Length: 68
Image (cartoon, rainbow, N blue to C red):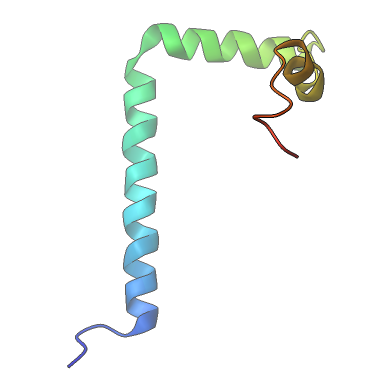
């Protein structure tokens, strides 16, 4: 006997994942230093001060660990 349809199970899974994301966002929002650092990082990206990801991967010698 199945209590939930496949569609209902998928909906519950999506809702649970969304709630988890919301909780993570709230945790981040409570961390003032992290929020400040994120804002600084975003500003640097907008000002083209950030390195491209592939360049950073090469500099850190992570080519084998990170595969495209």
